[in-house]
Length: 196
Image (tube, rainbow, N blue to C red):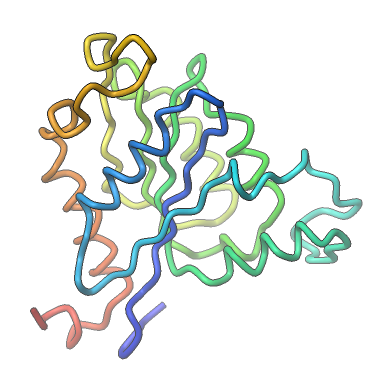
């Protein structure tokens, strides 16, 4: 998809709905770190979207949506040119809420670039591998920039929240900026990408 006038819109999907989650903080930090004057980043919070477990009678690929929440979700996702999936690793996998949100749709994801940003012990690489299979099945374009975010207990306070997310993830600034650079190369025409 090539844009010559409008900035490409990238949706950063907050892929956890756990009540005491840190996923929103990670997604907000990622959005600030990837900030780019040629791209528009927006958060998509699955806790706010609040989809039920997949309840459409037909498979998503046929696009015969019968539920209002599915049609609304389709409209939201159709508005974006690419995505960053931010989520924690759960038992070497991804959160059910994220897989469910992906499974609701099909064509809306197809062909769009996606960066996977999983956090966990050792950067959540098992969950990243598993999610790459899902995004490939949806015919998304798996980007080469997928920063793994290592976390450990020392980063968190007594409430399970980051003491200082900038200090915790400061070493990932360049990898996150590489995500923006790859989005630019994929979504902007050569004449646009050369402009400051």
